[in-house]
Image (cartoon, rainbow, N blue to C red; front, side, top):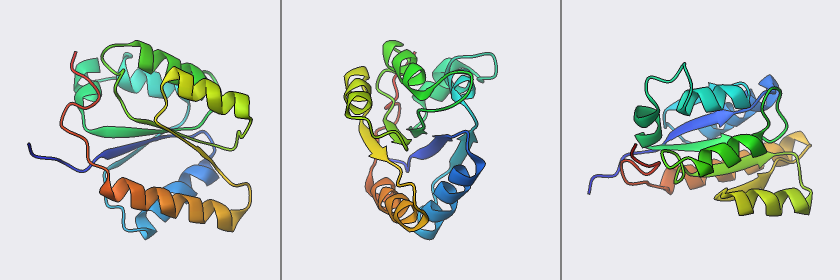
Length: 151
């Protein structure tokens, strides 16, 4: 089975955080495709909504979702719940990347099906280090084609 590098989809409303994540993933040597979505509604539209080419094309693509929790319109927990409850996107790998470190929120996200929960450090240097470590992970992770499910 031929494995392809994963496409990274970052859903993050904070422009500064989004820029830091992408820039430091690139500095860590991650050359994967990258798409930035600005809020939870854009994420839902990307996979299921009117702006999607088709839900099955997006869901079947070889991608991983980096998802913030605190966003306008639709928060990351609701995005996670909807994606994991839809058979077309139930197996989509979701990495929560957020400043929220409340243990109840961490537990809730895992119960809803997130694959990894990473707390973004508030200070610059630890944040950069966390993103670089994430970059190393994304360089080695491989998903079979259609890992996010087939509609």
